[in-house]
Image 1 (cartoon, rainbow, N blue to C red):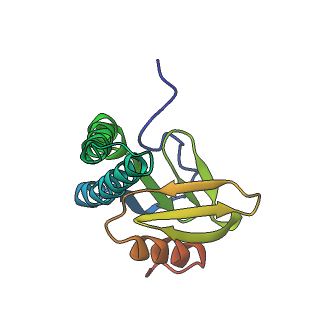
Image 2 (tube, helix red, strand yellow):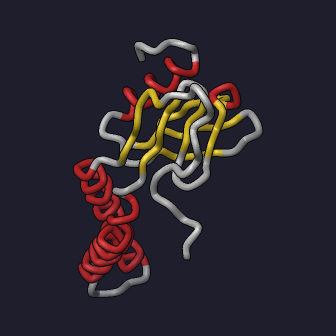
Length: 148
């Protein structure tokens, strides 16, 4: 049996309540992979051009194929991931749990929100439909506001 879970498995403490849940967005996942494919295609063509290969166009085919295969292969796992924000902690896939008081920074990277703890641990809430709203909601609950 695998130790990996796409949703939080950590039990809530007595009196702890879930304030919000954050799941990956399919349209954002597809958009991010389209941009990644464009970059991979350009890189593949650039490398073949720099090497003097007369079939530069094959770099585009290879880059596109690599990203599409990867996107298809991991989509079911990536799109099933859920994070739960409680009034005390941010609960991630499996047993990941970060106390709100331990969050040192909330950064945005593309469509993801990066949670950095005071000890330097990093967690990504990937493929968020509105990464700024996700970040704002976490910060609001961390500050003790429930209106986030």
